[in-house]
Length: 453
Image 1 (cartoon, helix red, strand yellow):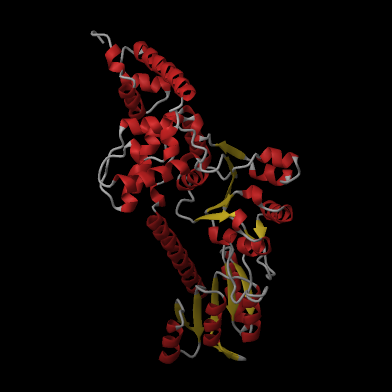
Image 2 (cartoon, rainbow, N blue to C red):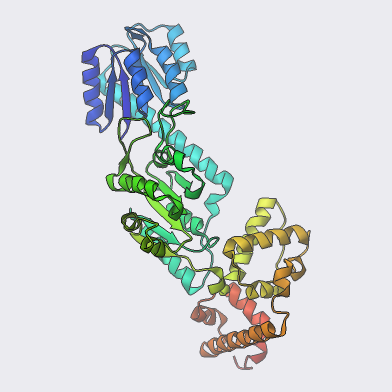
């Protein structure tokens, strides 16, 4: 549940309120004066603070101001036995969520606490969803009808509803982040944050602070307390991208957190439960790294509960027509352009290329083509030179010619087997109808169609 700080100098009030809140599952810390409260705020992160206005060594309103400086966005409830309009106005201006007068009923106060925590949660979710919409992440999907990608989609569907850690394997640019986003979007955690951690980009000296947060003054430059990625993820999903790049000593710290399901912010004294689901990814041969002693085997086994391998684009060329259409639609919307077609001969060129950069490279090629094509269709002339020259040599031409003959034979066999029912033939070969239609046109298959079919 939540961590709540009560700042109150009346022991009986503190004891009774603490009992009510702890009975609801919250963790409660107590401070009897400003000095104790400031020390606690400087050493721990809280989800809510309840403070009296009149304290032995000063005003709780001054503490409210300081609390927001140390922990921006901290919800605060102010209580007092000497209510006046001036204090109430100042409390609200300083960001207090509620201003209560003593004596108050404990159960009623507990309801106010639940309401304040729920409002804060809704506000965080609202901010997250707005970010998702702005980035267009709500449109993310796994594209491709090949047998390999059908299997990936099936695995994603199976694991999304579980709490299992997921390890996504695949070359750079294959779409590991897309798979992580789809897992999150298909899970019960979808309204909670999806937090991505680009592991190689974090300096080793800031690794703990970035992941686990820190308390104000914990190190030089820590001018305010800050939550880490693990806490920001809440009950959502934490995506550890390129996790194989984490140094060995930091792997040990990460393993400890995963095993304990809790962590302590840098400079902090209290443990925070880890509630997020972990999804890790790498473009390296992780088992080889384990064998070489460059990645901890115990960390690997903790993360590799449910592995998902994404094949490179060169091994699933039949997905290229669908991917090209999908990426073009996305790019056209992103740039505010009207829809334009991609010519069949352009698809032919894309199919002949090996795509060492995978889907990411395909997207970049299509973005360049959109810029060059003005308002017309995407033609081969709009593609990079290295794609156009591929296959121009005699040996390469012969190779692709043999490949085309083999593909044409497979397509004809499927059509003959299904009585020239194209939808059934496409399904038999594991192709989408769009991809199958492209091949029918490319190889002029209708010319071989029997008159009675």
